[in-house]
Each structure stands twice: as C-alpha cells, then as structure tokens.
Length: 201
Ligand SMILES: [Mg+2]
Image (cartoon, rainbow, N blue to C red; front, top):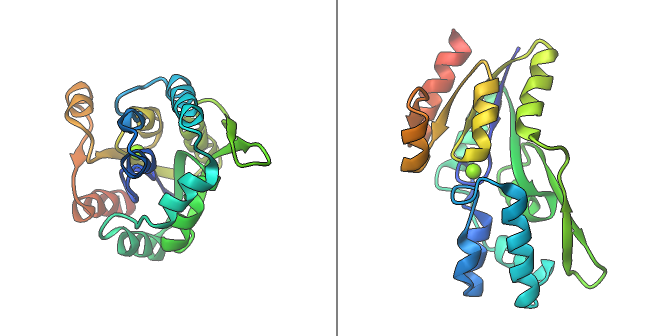
C-alpha cells in the first residue's frame, strides 16, 4: 500500500505565522523554520513576542479564519485522496490548523498542540514527539506501507530522507543548494508527476 505524506504550511496553506505577523504588524514574527532550523528556539521566540504584545490565541485564530489554502491546493488534495491515502505531517498546532483543514475537506493531520490558559494566553506547546515527521514515516514503513514525502523546509528533510521516495516543493534557494540530490518542484502539476511516478512504479 502506498501513502503520501505532505507538509502543510508552504505546501497546501500559507505560512500561518507570516500571515499573522503581517496582520498584527509584528515583522519579527515572520521568522519560520526556513530561517531558524531549531524549532524550540523559534517557538520560544514567538511566544515571548506574543506575550510582549499581549496577544492571545483568539487573536491568532481570528486571522487564520480569514486565510485560504494556497491556490489549487483544494483540488490537489481531492485528486490525491481519490488516488491513494494522504497524511499531512505538520509542526503546526491543532488549534491553528482547524479552520484551514475544513477548507481542505479534513485530510488526516498529525501535528502538535498549544497549551493555553483560561484567558486564551498561549503559555507553551506540546510536541507530540521529537522529530515527529520522521518517526511517523518510519512507523508507517514498519506497517509495510510505501511512503512518498514532500515538504518545503528544514524540518521536512528527515521525513523526505526516511521515505521510500520524495521531493522538495517550493523550497528556498538555501535548501535547494544544500540538498542537491533531491528533486525540487514548484507547481502542483509537477508534484503530481512525481507522485504519479511513485504510485505507478
Ligand atoms: Mg512547510
């Protein structure tokens, strides 16, 4: 059996933190895993900034509610799910993803959880496990599944390397440069071509 594992932000939806940074007028919040590979460092930096600006979960959810999936993502997801099984492996949080998952017709999502106080202040986060994307692919392989994985960031590399097949999608130049042996595609059509190759191999 063949399963497609996809990253979420930058692949199917915009970067949530970047959209929120622009809406809230806090340019420092535009840092993502593309800029800072150490996820814990990045999250603590974000949570400190939110506290400084007295911003709470409902403020962020309000912005996310107005966001749309990337152009063509809905159709891409529907096509994939007609052909095979799809699992989204993301480092985002369930509280952020939900409104956008509805717009993608609820594909399966493995992600993390925010810890919030009663007043909506984000006090921390729970990682399901360290290196969760890679472990998810390894676990699926242990069930005798064949895996294709694709993503755009540093935090996708271990998942792509663990998978039986995979590629980068719209990765920034720094990642393309350092991962020259990986194919990088920039459109859903080109990604489908890679996936079709995997499904029919
Ligand atoms: Mg991403």
